[in-house]
Length: 111
Length: 111
Image 1 (cartoon, chains in turn yellow, blue):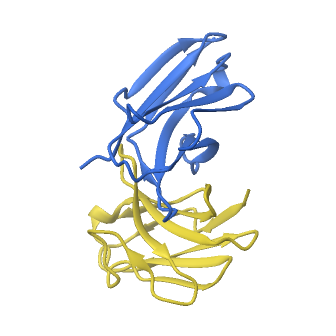
Image 2: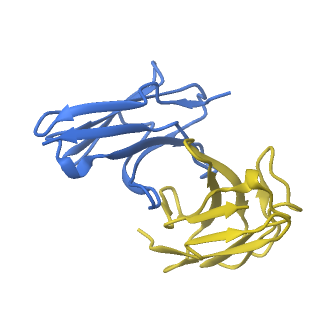
């Protein structure tokens, strides 16, 4: 298993600003992903964080809005850019091999 | 297109009885299935998984059954305990590692 931490745990941001979320895994993992859980909904995959190369985004998500970095096998960041109230969600990172382990999430509120 | 479906939004059972949570999928490329438990304000916690080459996997009080021909899986919790009260998500993946989640089922175990 892997233990995953995220920072910040929550934030309230103003429209038009950006927030960078950090994800740290306690061991090297093959794969890391970023998900979003909007209020009352399930988890939706945003992108695969690829180590040392550009992230792979799912349909409906673009790099300009959600730039992702993964400089090594234990760390990744997700930036939510030019935020609007519709970006208010819980953002979760996961890491692992076949079984993915999740961080506690970052609860983002955009006003 | 919802590739993974949990048709029961909620389930209520008495402590000590069996809880059965169901999940259906449509994509025949999925070959690995997972169940997660999620408490409010926390990330999903991995519970149990099953490969498509198996039809049953057991871990303590938790058993997952897979019926590939019906594209259906279920999670059995026996005996149910009040601490099991949470939202349960099933998820499916192919060899990409990307998880596709169902909508979740809220389980309430009454003392």
